[in-house]
Image (cartoon, rainbow, N blue to C red):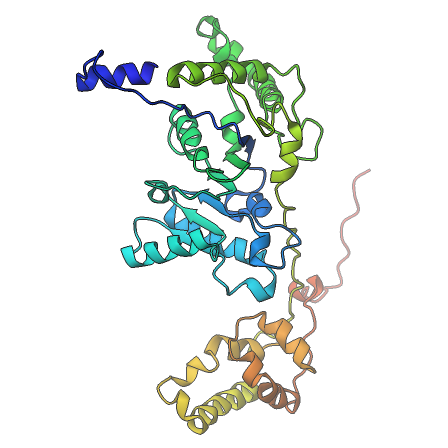
Length: 401
């Protein structure tokens, strides 16, 4: 009602001679979930729930909008989601990008493919939301808070309205940065201005602990398997959220809520099971490859000759420089390591750096195994220490007793 009243006053519409149709924005068939991003933001592991683990067909993936304002970052997000697909679906274009930066032709084509179900996940900006009336969107995700917290909440309510317009149920998920949950406990104290600077300095470690505890009590662990990953009914945040929903009801003139699906993750914590983050990847440190101090010249020359001959024999490579077949840095690498007895070992040493490995790997291996290279031994500390000067025969002085 307040919004309607403001529009009437601003546009000077007659209060007695107009018709108002307001169905409100409380979607009873859309469940709401809000939780923090638990993994590194640039890893996008928290979005793994968008691609089901047992997916085998494109129809197994729910039709999803992911709102993300960072156009450059959305490319990495697309790459990550594609890696979650089985190999036979990775080149089917199931995950696409959409923003005002693309041509009208591209946007029309992608949106058409999304509507018919060929594209299942659309990573988009607000450009996709404008005039959007797709009836069967099952999941809406807002990645990170756009702008201020207050405007983000209102925007999220608007975005959630795009879900389940023509189907029985939908899900709207707001994933926010962990920093949103951290509030300075001292700043909440009304008497903080009366506290001396020395007393505040002495209380910094204590404040840090209280701030972390405050964040955990107000949702920092939501959606995790750790204790506290779900709300308790006595949470103070629950009271605040209920009041906030009441305020939205007044502002937008909504009818009393009558949900036909689980309302939200506070009333129904089991909703958090549907949006669990993926497991963080544990990077294994690759073992160091022992190398000689200087490249082995015979190997260098043999590899240089090989790439020149290869270029001459293949007309399709005539337009390329010989370095495009095998880069100088890779030649230096291969001529600096100990003997390479197998193709598997060659693959480990190159670590995916050579694009022609599958085609020319056997030829390069044949060159390497026929050239004797002294095995490189690890340099020990004893070799690093300079040799001690020759003894003069004098004995060190005895310690004083």
